[in-house]
Length: 300
Image (cartoon, rainbow, N blue to C red; front, side, top):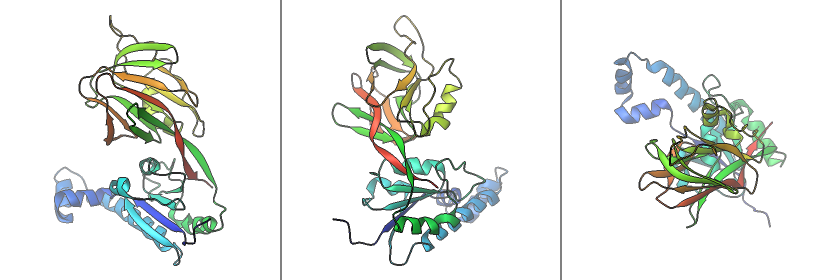
């Protein structure tokens, strides 16, 4: 039986650069003085603050009066309870969509770009001026979305981490990581700067940076492909380590296994958020594969 409650819009944002400067320095005047002492002007960050505030105002005021609404910051996502019928509106940079994706279970996400002069808009495709039409389309059950593949890391003791762009496995200080890597019947011992397992959505980010440094990397998947790809960063061949199993594609149902040989410092995190991580001690194995959930990204 469907819910009788009116629709709910959940607006997700993060503090602007100006907000963070004021929080760090106490007042706007102190923030301005700090920037001026380093030859910088508060004008640019103030402009982007105004753009974000304007976009948030447009997104909120366009919500029909009878609908429910909620505001949540990026820092509060791990404590917020999303409802199955929510419409999630992420206002900010592309990374904000990745931040919220792992907390959802199929709810549609609208990425709103408050500053097209600052953000690429790969995931935040919509301008604030379009949001009223999106609400109307959502109410009419005509909203179109595409499923974006996500990647998950799981351990034998039940720990699980999900990401939209990529998952990193390595040492938390980014020094040399030692581990065994296994794919199907292939296995090697590595000493490297860690590895990432990337989705097609993440192919334009960290993945692109890594693959430009590799001699013959596996082609990254497309944005809507179900496959994943893995890339080992700076593998070091020696008498004890190899460097052949360093890149490849992972079809749905195929897992890459990594077993830590690090006494301390082994870590696994997703989408660049190091605070949300799995500690990887000596002998602990983690499996990386396509996640069971996907991101439902609203499209035109």
